[in-house]
Image 1 (cartoon, rainbow, N blue to C red):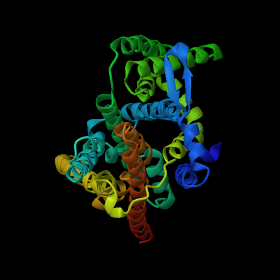
Image 2: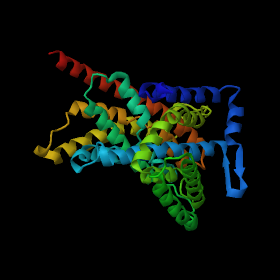
Image 3: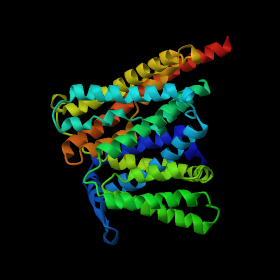
Image 4: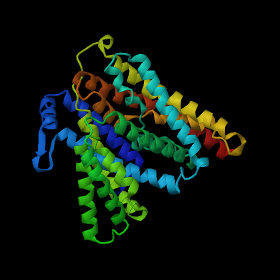
Length: 378
């Protein structure tokens, strides 16, 4: 299981799962796999009726967001975001990395309904971006990884807020209100998780919170976020260590595989939807411009009160920040849940755009790594 904690291996596994999904979807096995994905596995006594695909995106992915929330809390309390001084550059850069891609997408995609996909290019994939950095950035100072991690964590927080506010359909207040005491008890009890019975109760409470949030109409991954943020620090660290290999080795690859099970559209480039081109441009280019611009503005705000981040470091981080992948795929599914054809094109666009961003980011990171190698050798 140790290799699954390695950022490079987990990134390759994630990419491989997505490529395998696209390939198999366009073979004779494709219709059968898509049929399995769309098969419903209801639990009537809980009021749940989800397809296999939705069990993955709503269920398994909630664990990924649970771990992301634990990481966010750690960064806010003990990490790279534990003071306004530290948080300034990644926060402003992350906001720029959301606003600019969304604006570019909306400039390209102006049709009502299709423009709902604006959140798709706003996301950064933590696992993939850190994996790409680890691949070619060994000679880089640790502050660059810290900046990328902090930026990606804030980006995930923004993505969580977008999901909560823009993709909540038919809000049911009672289940949501019922979830609040469940989450609070989970948080209180997590500080006493020293025995197996208590851990079992925490698992039951976590599942109950997820069910209630799902029944409320809010996307169920938000339950994972709430549980991760409220969990006691000591238990959160142990839990994250235990679940990280499962997230890297099973949850994220399974999600990538399921999300990538799309049949390539039999249309020419000129017939592709503006959504496709909006994502292709907005994700790699918009993120590069937005993150770089935000970081430059933050440096100007900081002025002489703190050391400025070199522009070369910012460009390397901004290039890798365009790898949307997991969260972008989720945004695409949520935005175009009722438009299968556009959702397929959106999925393909996210895969291609994330690959382009990875290439740009790796090139910029490699250039920066050579710069630091030369400095150290001098």
